[in-house]
Image (cartoon, rainbow, N blue to C red; front, side, top):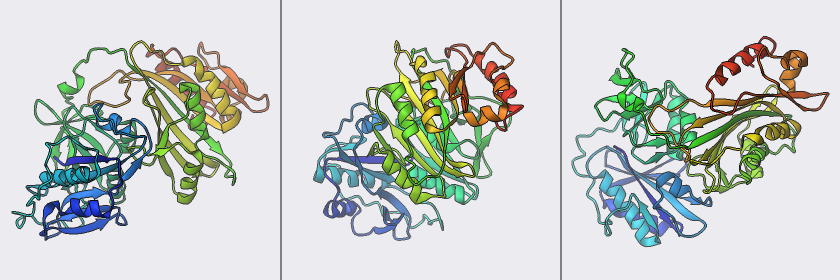
Length: 470
């Protein structure tokens, strides 16, 4: 499998430290760069990348190393540098070479190398040996383990696999090339919410190695086979036993709020404030940090987020936000230019340990403020029994259960207030907004009764008879 190493250092990897680290392969390796020199590759003479070193990230957000790498990692100080070093499966010695690169960085700069290695693993590695028989694939993506006409396969083994800059770049490149991205992991690996959202379903896949042999889809459990250069369902409807194995209840749960807001494209528009409002209502704090990939490295700043979106317009902008370690929370945020204005699509998930209660009473006041101040169009709130750390294991879990649905003024006007406030169900919607621009908030339950999905389906059908796409 592709082996990742991460150097967490209190000092920035300067030119001298990087030069010393890159000499871990001796004089027979060559250097190339990609992504506007943001990624350096140590390569064999024929151009096969063995190790890739990404541009160091300065992390200002507390808890990211622990969230993504494990609780035993606690970098000193309020900020530190995160340098990703990735060994390919191109040939023997690549893993030892990557470990030596990381070991040299932490020896020179201080800090910790993940995963931890024996002291002194900084020797020169003859990773160039026996590579004459390995032909470089023309146009191959760096450190992609298998590349076919239809699929890029990446092998990964981390306790938590997030939407790293590397994976985001591979996903962007494969999508542009009309290829699928298939992530292959051992069964113990868990995904973060941003990576789960980014994969977005077929043709991309999370492929899990079945302990009983073979592979299965980490999201659906379908047994997979390698066929015609890609992973595909076996075709007999089988679901892996490892996916359906019953886990003991933990009492942990997740609250998820997904909403869209719509704004006029004013010069003074400040993006991210609707997400900040939701965060405050549900956690009592602002987001701790934001970024475009994981680890999330920047202190929370709606103004900087807005600047990024303006620079990328009219293309969509995808960003992430993270909470403080004491209250697990993570969000995806997408800004899009539409014919009606500037849309923000937010999915905010918050984790609660056993014995903690999700603040369901805060949902209606949140909906009211989003309607009054942020141009809310729709909002769906769900609750599910799931890990409080907000990661997704490769196992069947209970489905989310709807708690509430909010319809904004524009769609209420399109449906007609009288029609929208009288669904053929025992629902008593609360009217929000102003008399001239009313919005409706529909309570659906306390998140424990799965029949709420039937209620929501009937409500959607009732509203959909008048509102396009409701």
